[in-house]
Image (cartoon, rainbow, N blue to C red; front, side):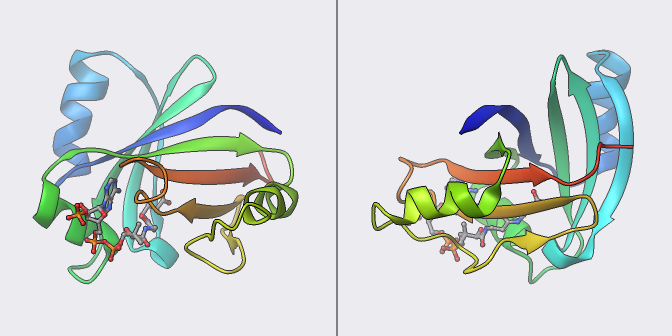
Length: 136
Ligand code: CMX
């Protein structure tokens, strides 16, 4: 049911600064930047093979991401697995008694997402993502 790693999220203080490293120096293919107000983050997407790298900058001090940066500093924030049907994937996990951060998937303009707390997954925040539209 899990098809691939959709993306790896990296928490950064400034997307513009981080792009200088990941795009200009490392040379990853830049796809786009976008703001996701629902998650209070600004994202820059880069592509490696079939997988994206998401550079994540907090849009507000009261966001989950700002709390992460304050506590742990910059670094890998989450791994996202691609699924065809997020509701089905959630049911399977929930059947083992494991809860998601959001009761129902959060619907963004081109994808549905949900998270599993890092306390369950041995220190790594996991995301499930169902892409509704191709990334433009
Ligand atoms: N990876 C690994 N560990 C993490 C973590 C992360 N991303 N976030 C928090 N932790 C750890 C903390 O270090 C802490 O560990 P200790 O108890 O050992 O100190 C523990 O988890 C609890 O931390 P907390 O600061 O109290 O965090 P909360 O439980 O309040 O929040 C979480 C954690 C996962 C519920 C919250 O970050 C969340 O709701 N995340 C989902 C939404 C999100 O991350 N959105 C941004 C990305 C959006 C996108 O990709 O579009």
